Image (cartoon, rainbow, N blue to C red; front, side, top):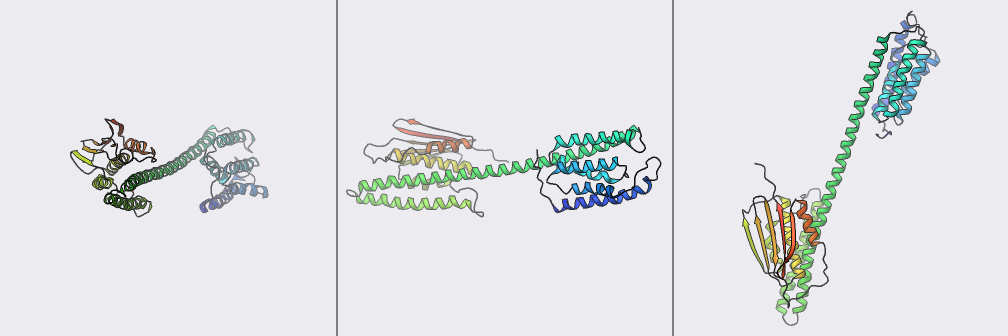
Length: 380
């Protein structure tokens, strides 16, 4: 059911005035001949008749309570008829009130009231009118008109519900997109911070290990730390800038930055690129870069000093990113305390979000991470 509380609009406040005007003018015009017509013999308006004539339009003011307004309009009109006042557009108010009630979703009440109103018309016309009649064509015409009112009201209700449902769907879609953007931002920040802070941690450990006996090598490690801290600030600004209204809607990391990434790790990395190298969709390009970044980060965490083989295979429909390390050397500095983190689950989520797969398994003394990311077909 739709919300019964309908916020009034200026046009809604004018409607009772317009309905009241037409009912008064129309009834006065009809009264001129109906009170003298031998087949009608209606009663002229008196104070009670005027009150009943205006009650229906006044009931239209209570848009916040459409059922109450409909009951008042229908009952006042029925009493107006039962007291023998002239026929005219007095039926306008109950028609409008019934439409409002159905459009607001109160069908279970409105339909029986409308059926009862038609039953009253039949009983009154056949047995209690000043000049009773059994003109069934007239009764069928009234039934058809009241049915038409019902159909129009139901059509209006259906349109209103569809608009409300469309608005709800659009709002939910907007919230879903905003949530996905926040998750993407969180994942981007995790990858940026995890990689660079892990690199800083490893290089700081190396510098502390070498500073007494090999100060020149320690200097190199400290230089790497300086560059990594600068890079993490730059990447964080890039990722966070997407929150601005005038900024790009997606982070700028991609496979084109892979050389810089490899250079920052300080690991001996052998690169191999196969297939037709070409521009990739932004989401595939970014996911490939972040997966390679996270895999290299894991090497610096858990296998310092290992050699790495990084393979990019540009297939016709799939980009394959494969990172294989040889395992840490016994004499290298270990990096306890970094924990497992969210690296592998995060990589799997990135691959899965694109419809791809990611495997992470032991490979000899080392470890291998392999992601297969589908490349969407580009329209001709």
